[in-house]
Length: 503
Ligand SMILES: [Fe+2]
Image (tube, rainbow, N blue to C red; front, side, top):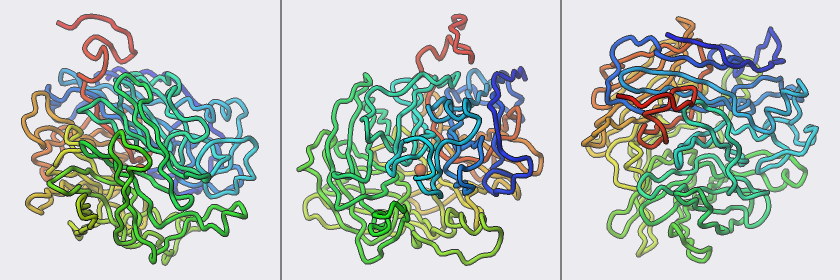
């Protein structure tokens, strides 16, 4: 393994930190590495060709008022690239305006999600305002560039998918509103579909960025009030937005308090708009009350749109456990508390009727599919299982939606995974003809690995384990991009230099 330390961020976190989401498997990193020819246990297939990218919060300062929320940390992206049976790794902080400013001041400048916005020392970003836009939630690849995003809305930061150098902000980002996490990169059209939300009418917008990275469409999607949508979906002809009955309590909001409350008496509303449709063309479908954090996929079938996602039985779980103040405070993030289960909504475009079906009893979330099936009928979904009471993943599941069967792999006690991406094999001939890729945080061995599974034999365990230079923080959202979608992939080295033509 050829390893080089290429950067180091200033951290002012206390040595004796006791926050459960800044210690143990969530201990943040300060180092930035470049590592080539990584040590592999097993064998990397030569037809695994492209990059696995993972974003996640990685805090370097204490919270300004002492109440760190697990989603406050600065965004750090990791990349593991696979080429010619070898792997390379890079990790970089996203050079957001907020990260750069707090590196200069050597102290926090913005209040976090569990703190009053009035504590912020500077104006900021986000749907609720006066937050730091840490671009830490999600990462996708569009037009050959990695894009990081923040779930409370902010700028879209452009990153080189090989070096992870921050290239700047997407010029099409709507000012004032920003963009929410989970824009969708449609491999078939080259478009990027996105939404944003905020506290002012119309409360929601929907947009389309063309394959040449220009804003091609942007419309109001009026809602009855401020909402907290987290994800969207799309089919070949439609984009799918949502109005979940979990939102900031309006009476508290008037006092500047942002407290999300679930309203079981209100329906889940699913908004369907033609992909280049107008505000007037949005159609709303009503379904059973829940909060949907993540959708899996959607597609058209006859008169219906089939929409798969995770239905939460308990969108506002009350804490019933013991443990430290912070353990109790953030237990609601655990999948077993939300009770998230794979669910199907069928929206009839002719009659307006909605049919719902619970697809699984097993609690999973963070579902991924073969990206080329986005908006098309998919058979498989790959999702995470959660550690009880913790926002940590302890295994992965391959859901077969045709047979109703699952394949499961557990990482083992003390080993935590990330969102698992599906990497189609070069020359892939079927939906699950490829590999599953994830990153682990192994507390037993004090190390991190990138695991590669044969997507057709998930239960057999990884076919290769790639060692990273150091143990990384546990994390969530990830994506896969084929080498063929990255400009210069065959000729660039991991420093971003076009070194040589490969024989
Ligand atoms: Fe998310």
